[in-house]
Amino acid sequence: MPHSHDHCHHRPGEACTGDHAHAAVQLVPPPLSLYVHLPWCVRKCPYCDFNSHAGKGALPFDAYIDALVRDLDQDLPLVWGRVVNSVFFGGGTPSLFPPEAIDRFLQQASARLRFAPNLEVTLETNPGTAEHGRFDRYRAAGVNRISFGIQTFNDDALRRLGRIHDSGEAERAVKLAQDSGYRNFNIDLMYALPEQTLAQAEHDLERAFALEPTHISHYQLTLEPNTVFFARPPRGIPDEDGAWDMQEHCQALLAQAGYGHYEVSAYARDGWQCAHNLNYWRFGDYLGIGAGAHGKISSGAQQQVLRRWKHKHPQAFMDAAGTPAAIGGDDVIDAARLPFEYMLNLLRLHEGFDLRDFEARTGLGRAVLQPALATAVERGWLHRDGGRVVPTELGRRFTNDVVELFLA
Ligand SMILES: C[S@@+](CC[C@H](N)C(=O)[O-])C[C@H]1O[C@@H](n2cnc3c(N)ncnc32)[C@H](O)[C@@H]1O
Ligand code: SF4
Image (cartoon, rainbow, N blue to C red; front, top):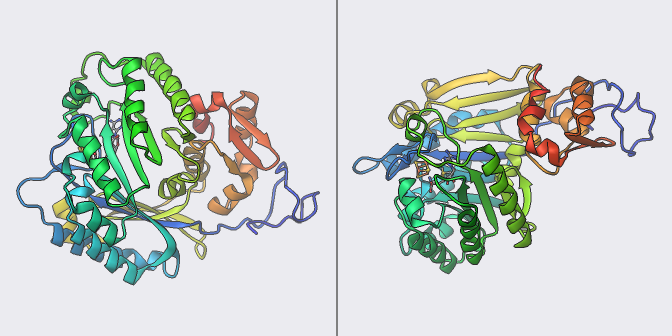
């Protein structure tokens, strides 16, 4: 039990309405996942602010895998004995790495960590890097979920986004993976693209549905600082209202096609939500391995939540991996900031959260959420049902404002 119910006026086992303070709240470490960052791409896309670098010449795949293993070894004491429920190879373009390299990393990791029997292992794939035969070998290595960065099926738009593939290649890549037995895959799409019409955004979804993905991530194109698009914004990007209109229409199409909206940008067929991303949004724990990777690890013994991040630059990371110099920073999240960080994640989810879960994951009593919670309910942003808190439709439209209420 995360807290003692001595002060509650309900019997044990009955839902707590949460309107009173609780004593002896305990932080209980949540489920754990593993994020692995692979930082290279064929070419840098002009809208992208991920830690990704255009690879020049032969990339040091083997040396990078060795560095990842050293990096993991250094983090192991943070998670001794805990079960890992998912692995996510993100980038950058993980599909640039040969299957043998991914296989070697997974073998080394499984010798050091306790992998859950139903471990979800996702690999991000740029369709421009898909080759015949590769998916069989990723599968043999243990990758059981693929995430394709397709963005749009409009060839003009793909060119303007600086993508290295056209729509035909995107479809071929998905078919190659399906031929290798992949049924569980995600398609990343972006909307509110330069000069994009509503009909085009809807057409992108139709093309995606035809491929029968289990999951669709539908992102609004954002102009991120330190990108080419930010410095020189392309013409014809829809304004906020235009983008919201597209989102609403697309959301309806996704629902009709059987994709349930469960997070701001995430839609899935029943039972196919992404376990790895869900764990982030539920304020779960994760190790972050590789250049620029971020981790979040809770300690029951120390009753604290630690954030740790790694050096961003691939070569500097490789040179230092396994030594303290590879760690970009260690930061214990301040108790005053924990409610905000928790809400930043949980309020993205349609399912909302239980106050009891808030207490277990932060070690703080639910009383600290007042009066922000009351204000949010009063404004019609959050709905409360006993100990359960769920964002309303209005709250989902203004997630940032809702979350801000919880800033200390
Ligand atoms: C690491 S990439 C996926 C794999 C691979 N690098 C690729 O692009 O094909 C993650 C996803 O984030 C999304 N993304 C990147 N930059 C974005 C931006 N500025 N606005 C919205 N979505 C973005 C794209 O949909 C992209 O597929
Ligand atoms: S969007 Fe994907 S392929 Fe393009 S630069 Fe970013 S990580 Fe690389």
